[in-house]
Image 1 (cartoon, helix red, strand yellow):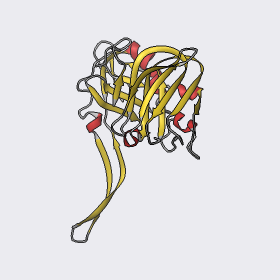
Image 2: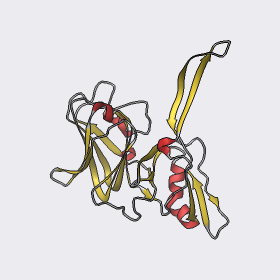
Image 3: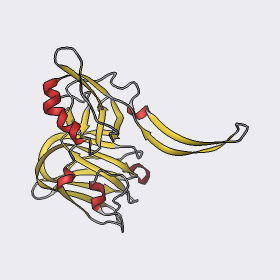
Image 4: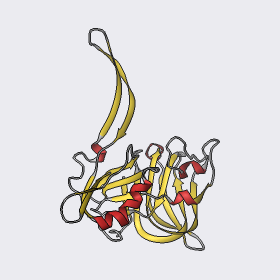
Length: 256
């Protein structure tokens, strides 16, 4: 689910334009927490990998990220968590020099990916305050300055990401073809999202640094934040993202 700060309509383009969340500030920050269960360190949520988690031992709990220097941010992405199952509320807080001040809060109703979008601010730390009766677990927290794509995309993906189920099964059949059961080998939402009519200058200056970064690090894609708040995904490239000239003026297209 995508949560948008009250009255925030975007820094450059409105909320019907796609967003790409990348270049996690956590790569150059220090992660700490109020408490951490054994084997569930605070640093686990500051990486791009989904195999390890941070989990507090007491509630409410806070997870803090202290940046190496001031950075401008306007977006958060959270992946592989159980905030919905645990019934936790997460509140984003900014340090004003003397106290923590709330930015926005949300209580997820499921364990799908989450994103927060808010007005850009230059800060050197951020706090995630988790409240509720049950301690949640979180694998990935991304803090960044989102890329706002200058083109609205209506048919960039034939299947919206929240409907794009991709499941690989191992099916057990009898020798006579009767169904005996099956197990899930792979389960994830995946689609191809194509953005067209981007100028070559924009592609080179604004998007290509992200494209090169995606060879190593996953990213979040928000398809249409305002009208499709469930259409977001944490994406891992399985090959190079390759921009292509369209043959129309200096326009290019790219599939994420």
